[in-house]
Image (cartoon, rainbow, N blue to C red; front, side, top):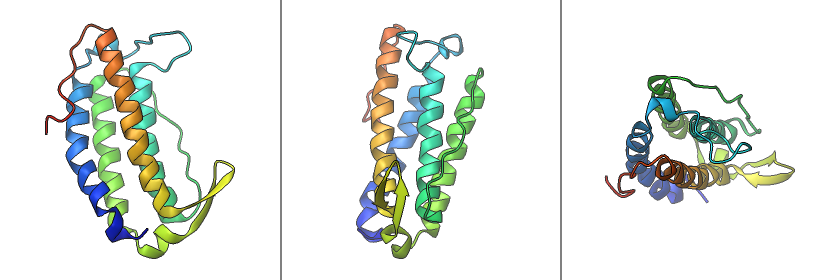
Length: 151
């Protein structure tokens, strides 16, 4: 897979991220610590995890080695939303620097070896997975989530 082959994924993420941000903005600040079960991540932790991984996936493809950042904690929705914005900007900034060589390079991660392009796809999959979780959290808090295709 080369950069041109991933442009569709990148274009779709450019459409999806603003909707995801509005979805997170639906969560009342006093529900950021909501967990459906004690062992589950909180609502804020899911978002912090999702957007930390987003930047790490791009950095992994760019650096050719696994990048795993510490996930921050948030008590303020404004800070969480700002973090999301920063990580999305970072992702696209790194994307602009990636070459076909970056995307083809084999990278050891998670006990396996993956081509750099796969980390872009991992970020895409991870985003949808955790956005789906977050949508359920909203419903459990009595909030009707906005339509996922509300571009």
